[in-house]
Length: 345
Ligand code: CP3
Image (cartoon, rainbow, N blue to C red; front, side, top):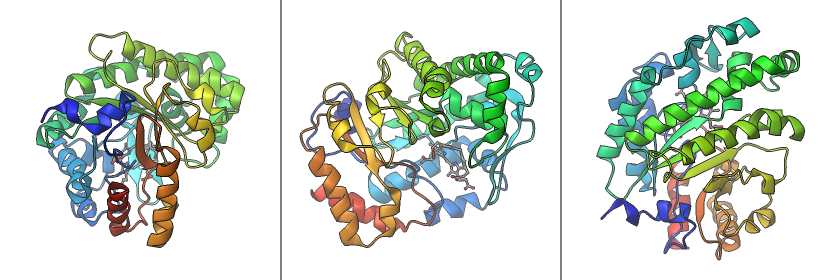
């Protein structure tokens, strides 16, 4: 079989597929006992990400367990901030903590040029994973959106409301735009390298889109995602690589999220399905089952999943996925059940 027979890639081309392709955001991770067996050997999560053979093993775990229609690179969106000297660490129960976050406009001015080769370990992980996957199973490469990376880099940690970041962008709009341009260029080079090493599709995670009211969203996030996707579509290495954008809980209308140059919109849990159906033939759609549904009993899981499949029955290019990542409290047998009943549909 060749790569072109992947139903996931066909759906990204907005083709009708014989079966609905399935994968899950955060399909590799803490809900799986196999993951913990590997994770316990590393104190700092990023140290584990720096081991390509370990990333390969982790990316394959959900493929082996559930026979999903695509793998996703095992890594994290915070590899870029780490590579530019912000010193990212993952601390138990706290999430990411930056030892050297962006604290001043001078820090932005003095950032060294992004060196794409500093993330060689990620490209090696793509290469190893791709080689280990079944031939018709593609691999998704990914990056955080420039805005989401900037928000973490300025806040220096996960936060509920990112108050410090919001103040920072009000105080230093020009420097923040400069930083967003810097990150856009870094994301472009990083994603291009992932494609060179075998990534078949790209997903951009705008996980902190919801921090910005609509006018600010266009200024600080949308603008840079658009820039990034045009750079990718205009480069000979990446021009044919499909692009998926995930926007978490956007404060703007879905219609305006159909960024120029994207192939697929990944819907958050609260997205309006009727609005999504209007995007037929414009973009492929991925999502948006609430991961919390996986905590319910089987009959509810089935009813909720089938609601989505019914809605998108005539939609060319529908990919089954969740509206956000699988959480650590989910029982893998429910993930298996969900996958099986979608296949039975
Ligand atoms: O199968 C996969 O999707 C695995 C690859 C992957 C990870 N992170 C592994 C990971 C991907 C695609 C990501 C993306 C990512 N990372 C996002 C965007 C997706 C989203 O959820 O919105 C974000 C915001 C991050 C940043 C991040 N990484 C945080 C905030 C945390 C800690 C809290 C949390 O949710 O786990 C991480 C850690 C992380 N990234 C883990 C994994 C498996 C858990 C680390 C551990 O085992 O301690």
